[in-house]
Image 1 (cartoon, helix red, strand yellow):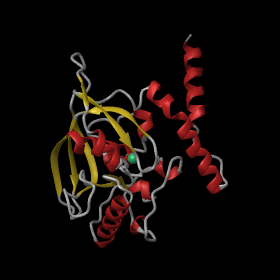
Image 2: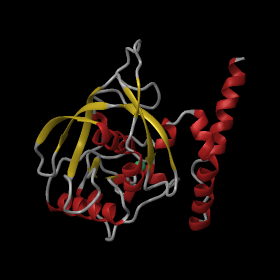
Image 3: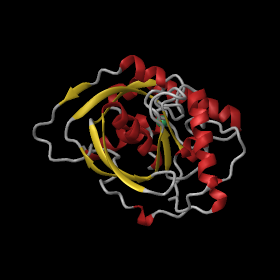
Image 4: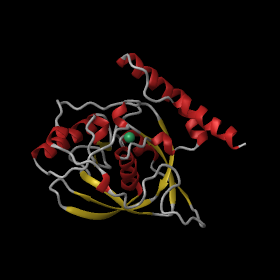
Length: 251
Ligand code: CO
């Protein structure tokens, strides 16, 4: 979902007191797992064509394990009414679902596009549209924050991420800009940016936290199978077994 993507407004507004974690010896500019490299090059990305912007309103939030959440997202090179209309509809569904951020793949549109508003209310705060965003710098300081995701209804759990990021992106008119984000906007951005990389927030959780929501993830997989009649394209149970198998292999 996209609240903060999925991060839901409820979640953020009630828990915005990040615990700061200092890594004095860290030389990394990004967390160790699943993070795209700073300056992730969009050069290898496919370019969107007009058909990629087509949708039938209203947009609906896709839930895990919908495969579109894992599909490659195309770079936008045309800034026209199709993009404007999509952005408008994304804000609409974000506000209706109490989200404060939403990425395009969460509504089944596999484009490198996100919208967010840290206040989460239409007419309040600032509406931010980021097209083809990239990260040029991550802070060494990490914070823990209780995140939700519109694509994972009812699930909230702690995720550690850099406290601030420097990013560049295009606005809805195609103008390129660079900005430093910190605190909640940085948190929302990173969660949504992960969606554009096909990364989901439970992959950022430590094992203990992940264990606490495994049952809920499996329930979503079962729900997906019931609604589509298809086997779940991914399975958190297999994820665990694979890790265990790797452990034995090393021994
Ligand atoms: Co999300």
